[in-house]
Image (cartoon, rainbow, N blue to C red; front, side, top):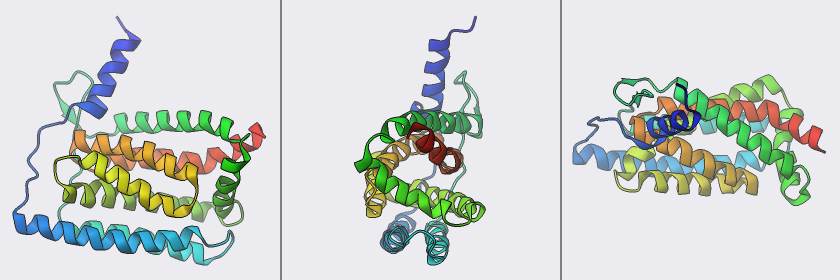
Length: 241
């Protein structure tokens, strides 16, 4: 018999709690190299992100800056060392598979939560105004191009933050450390809600990385969330106004 609470608990444990077995240990020299490359990438990437998010809406340099940002994250991640796709537990907790369905579900759950939150934010001008300014990059520019860049940056961020940086932090406190760094980098935008989103998203995909040992799950969840927010959030804010 189907029991919603039991099924929900099994899903959470499989997707976010119980790590799958793997051995991704690296020689000390490779680990030090990963840390150095990750640190350099972080400095460059944070600088490019700050410049990109402070460009006025409609400025074509925004597209160039975000493409460069995706290239920075991706190049740094790939140069740091091997990256793994990872595996997740299935719902029964006895077999493993690629974390596709679970990640899609987590992405949808995040979209639902942020949509509800947007209904409240719509009536709070101090929070909404910076968010409107950020979304103006899509409304005043080419939406298909912005969507493509959003997807590319979503993948690139996961390659770096949950790939290279997570592996470079080490086993202890990797979820917490990478989430905090992700929040601090995002805070460069000056948009409080974007930093809050980075905290929630960073924690969820960080837990996915811990469970699966790879980047596939975080990439899928990030893409579902970011692309949905790009298309759904403006409409939600408009309706709630």
